[in-house]
Image 1 (cartoon, helix red, strand yellow):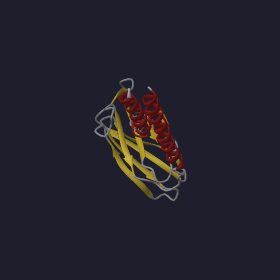
Image 2 (cartoon, one colour):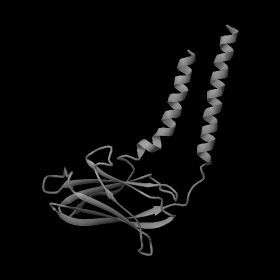
Image 3 (cartoon, one colour):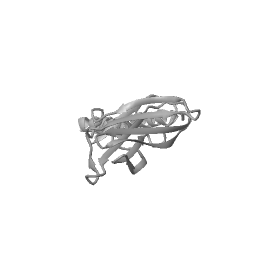
Amino acid sequence: MKTRLIFLVLAVWGLATAVPFLYAHGGGDLQIANASVAGYIVSIWTAPNNPQAGEDLHVTVGVGSEALGAKPVLDAQVEIEVFAENGELAASAPATTEQSANKLFYEADLPELAAGTYRVVVTVSGSEGSGAVDFSLQIRPSASKMSWIIGGIVLVVLGGTAVFWYWRQQRED
């Protein structure tokens, strides 16, 4: 019984801490849906959903062939550029299928950005042509990490209470 309790506490803790990392791959906030770009159908997601200053930005790009009914294209070159409001390049990175958990998507991790409004330009080039699509992205000021600290304290207290309760029950028997 003691082993089960320890396993349960560790499993809950593991799931609670893994969700942000798992969510980064292939999910997020849909920015562009099925845009026609130089013979390609392009969809773009960003994660986290509400990006904040001080966090890495994860971009997922789906590229399909317009001529083949949006069949995935896996040999395109995808470049992501992030421009600040003043037009300066704030960050750039190639998006590749090698970085992707799902090899049908192109993914890139961009470095931390300061709070502000940015224009994200995604350029796709390959055998069907070359073109770009862009969207505006708001990076919010960094929020307090206090909710994570409080959540961790609550988990420790709950785990400690469960262990104490179990130990007490064993002593009474």
